[in-house]
Amino acid sequence: MIGLLDCNNFYASCERVFNPKLERKAIGILSNNDGCVIARSNELKPFVPMGMPAFKIPQDIRKKIILLSSNYELYGDMSQRVFSIVQDYLYDTELYSIDEAFLNLQNQENYIEYCHFLRKIIRQRTGIPVSIGISKTKTLAKIANHIAKKNSQHEGIYFLNTNDPIFEETLKQLPIEEIWGIGRKLSAKLISMGIDTAWKLRNSDASHLGKLFSVVLERTVLELRGTSCIELDALDIPKKNIMTSRSFGKATKELFELQEAVRIHASRGAEKLRYQHSLAQSVLVFLRTNRFHDRASQYHPSIVVPLLYPTNDTRQIIEAVQKGLKSIFKENYLYHKSGVMMLDLVDKEKRQFDFFSRAENEETKARNVTLMQTLDQINKKMGRNTVSFGGINPKASWNLKREFVSQRYTTRWDELPVVK
DNA sequence: TGGGCATTT
DNA sequence: AAATGCC
Image (cartoon, rainbow, N blue to C red; front, top):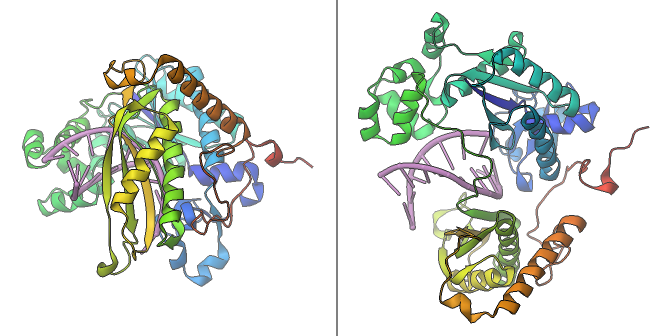
């Protein structure tokens, strides 16, 4: 059996752990730049749909609810706490997202009881409520999880048994767009073919749909039948590409502002590379104007810059992205977002010994590695960007807008919660 | 009117 | 390189 553990209203729950006044209130968490609502407490759900831009929330509703900026330092740390408990008890798990994990329950005898136990200790030790769905495949476990969350009588745990007559009934009542892997575009096409429920999809010709659409859909059909074909991924698989991007709090036309932004993205990307022991062989820089503005003012350039040899050295990556930026930058556009991607990643240890790497002598190479390690250690201890290449203007007009951010209760000595 | 990934075509 | 999907 496979379990899907999902933290309930995760960001909202994190905020509540440290601020009990938020209990039983309609609260919402906003995306970066306080853009749209990306997490809601149950109390908020009837009033504000997922993803609604904050500025579109009607005034009368605004007054009754509490909106908070996102505090990823807090959520990331709480996520680690939750999953370290899970992994203390279950070795075979896949961290799927900041608030979800798949569990291999194959070797658990009383897996339902076991999940009740997990749920209880996670709540006890972190304050975070979780739900667990259990079934034969990842796709079905996802469905089971939705049921566990929706109906409180299940106490957070639901087992979707493919042999139970209720199984057919459940799939018949499940709209196709609620299935994992079936988004807006696909569901529209499937509905036009008359396939509008999970049960109808389950009974469709898998290989035919595979040819018509994609192997992803083919696998989904099989998974709905109880044939597992999406395996659990190991925990330590390195990312295949790494992106850092951000929209500007205030859009800009200035090259020097873009240069600063792109330099920060490059530094952050290089840091992430080192963290997973990878080297990049090329980098991509992109700019974009605001897609909600009119057509005439749109410009979405990007460019891939090859690196001479695989590297995770911040300086080389900055140099490459600045070169890329210069070649795509055009004046008079109002830029809304910029970003950098690390591409063609290879493992540091497995990197082929190539002709160009000999150009650096061994001593210089070792010193560069030490420099990057020292940089990472200082920034880890003292906070991001304590040491950086080139200045960082804390008052830059394009900085993140975070008007309603809570404290970083668990990761900063000076922001610890105070008990009175 | 978010950011960060993977995957497929 | 673009499209699609997920959280």
